[in-house]
Structures are given as C-alpha cells and as structure tokens.
Image (cartoon, rainbow, N blue to C red; front, side, top):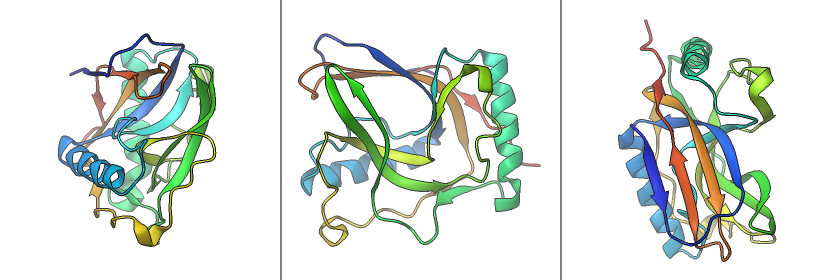
Length: 194
C-alpha cells in the first residue's frame, strides 16, 4: 500500500530514501507525539513521515532487493527477540541526517534513536549513496534550530515493534518549507520471526 502526502506548492529536487516503516499502530503513536512536539514549539514536527530513514539511495530498490533486505534485517533482529526499540537508555530527541533541498542547506531530520543491531549489513552497497543512523523520524529542523531542553518537551511514548516493512520513499520540499511532499512506495514486510 502506498502512502502519499502533499501540502502543496511546487516541488524542488527529491531525495530518495530506504525507510523502515513501523506497523500502523506505532506510526499513530508517533504522529500523535509529533503533534505534541509541534504544540511545545518545535515548528518542524510532522514535516517528515513517521518512519526510520535507513539510507539515502542512488536508485529505488526493486521488489526482490527489498525482500532480500527485509529477510536479512529480520535475521539481524533475532538476538533482540525480533523487536526494534529505542536505544537504551532512551535518549532525548536528536538530529539525524542533514541535507539540502529547495535551496535550503542544513535541514536535519530529527527523532528518537532506534536500537537496530544490523549495522547496515542488510543494505545492497551498489544502491546506497549513504547509510543513516537509525532514527524514528518526527520532523525536520532548519539550520541552527535546537531541539529545546528535554525538560520542556513532552515525554516520548514507549514504543517497540516487531511488525515493520521496508520501502522506497521519495521526499521533496518546496520553498517555503511548509510545502513538502513524500511518497512511500510498496511496503515489503519483514518476515515473521520463527
């Protein structure tokens, strides 16, 4: 099932990501938390989908490649009981990948650090431009924006999940940055743990 989001405006260049898509119940909690962060003063909260971007891609992965990556990722999670959870101890919000789009340098994805023991070994090197630190995304921050003091932010929900999928995702941003567009391609679910 594809997910498309568009706030309007003319799109600029695109970034292509390989993303880990949590089960919809977890995504619902993350979207609710992003709204709470927005109300607390993080204006970029919600401007990136509730997924974990794992890599910047040179090209979209084909279905067979996604399936192979999903199988390898599931195998790497078996020592952790097949679950993905926050890093221990749970960190405050942190910045992940920084990139430039629509002439705006230094935009950063921010979110919650994830415990994924794979170390990127499940990614096909020929398709990956850059591996990213595992982070459950909650939004975008412009250059120089801090994530506020952790004491002033609402506490993050406790989330761990075993049901997840890999997918290609394109993301573009128009100026001003309130106009963003993303498309999450067909999801390839991690096989059930045995």
